[in-house]
Length: 323
Image 1 (tube, one colour):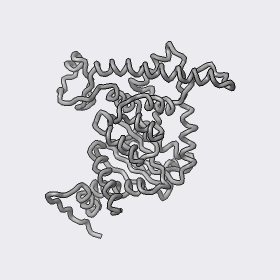
Image 2 (cartoon, rainbow, N blue to C red):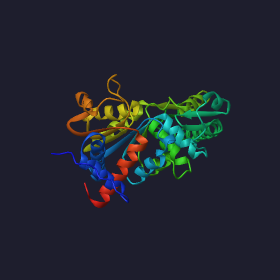
Image 3 (cartoon, helix red, strand yellow):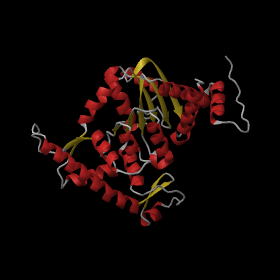
Image 4 (cartoon, helix red, strand yellow):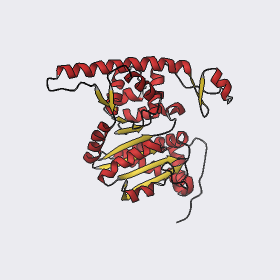
């Protein structure tokens, strides 16, 4: 089979370009084309539960609405993310924002009360609002748990204990921002797992709150809910945006049932150092985190560029039944 040379013309739609990638079939273009086909297949079939893992600064990097729309459309069943993306979603929910074009003199940025994430910027003023608002929500949730315990004659628990997943669900119900990932997930009953939640500004504020309030967040409780989802799923597909802890939590949870049936990975990390973030998906088969015979595809590139293209193409394929 020959490599087909790509043709690019004016007035092409995204799906037309993706089709040219698929027709070429090799290198990065081929990987993007195959990922688009695989994503469309994962989304379309109701017997496949779709796990989305999100690492890196994807909310600050502009993918907040993309993730929210995937939840609204019912295209993902489980979200696994970092504490940082939770923090930045709430930062915007509380009226803050993410900024650009402030330069790269980090000492001047520090003096001006700004933090830098690549070429994305945050303001300390926004984080001050975040700290105030999240403490109010923690307080409401703690009092709600305490009331439930006091009204339950079978409860002898003196502590207000909640899982990470349930804490994020309760916060989602309390915020008013219609674009919030947490709010939309709560409204659509899509669970959010954040195993590294404490390693974030959210986690710092949570720790500070617990110094003077009776609230305990139990990370182990999440595994009961996550394992139930895995065992109850006929098939599991994974969309792995970036690597790190969210990627591992996603794959490792599916080890309980022999691994995922399909997965797409988008990363810029390399494999030579043995890091999980850069590990080829095929390596997961050796750990039974991906099934032997599973459909796996990796794309090397910036998630903020590659995933919107792939997702847009998949939506078009589903709409026009072209996969």
